[in-house]
Length: 256
Image 1: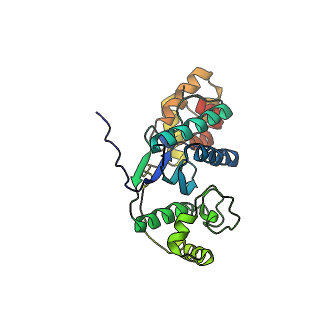
Image 2: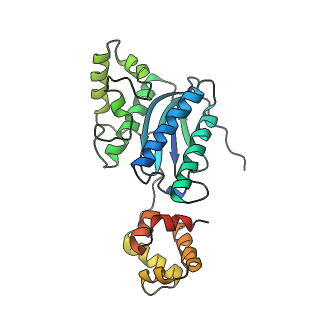
Image 3: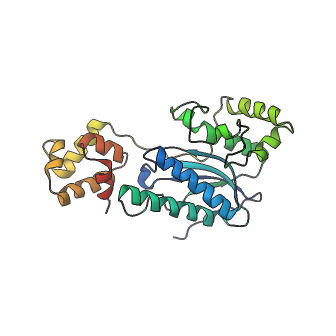
């Protein structure tokens, strides 16, 4: 069945969500997150898009972008290919990292632009990670800094708030902290399994008496069980690692 063509934004502005395939984590540590931001910066210079907001979560990324000379799909392909090459090299893995088709929505009004930028910056708060100010991996603090070194094009939004930069920053902080029920591109609700249930499922898959017996199996048999476990809805690589004692890198390699 052919894919439905994406709606074209009259402003060139899009809210994008990129997520890990099968809901897997796409950032293991801060080095990975820094590498992704560096990749954004590299291709921002190369393709001349404008970046108004970003937020790096554990298994997905939100971006607020205006395409210019280069189409959005080509921009995201360049960013994705570069980061996946790095990630696969670092963790000695092969294959896809991101869900094949990124999610996007058009942003064509000032009011919805306001909503999206607040939604993106409040992601860590609503996920229970930290406050917006304390979260290192979003563009929230780019708007309150006067250093001018951020990769984010802050002038566009701040200019909507006030011609005076100090006033604009104050209004920005106030707006970002307004309680709300904003809903933009949402991560699909996932089924969550308890560790006890995960252990039961893995034991059944491998016909194991004790979950830790999986560590004693030959690699081919062990990887077969791990591959099937990762296909179970709601079972993450981190959870499999936790209940089996097998490293995340070994679990990832079992994909092949």
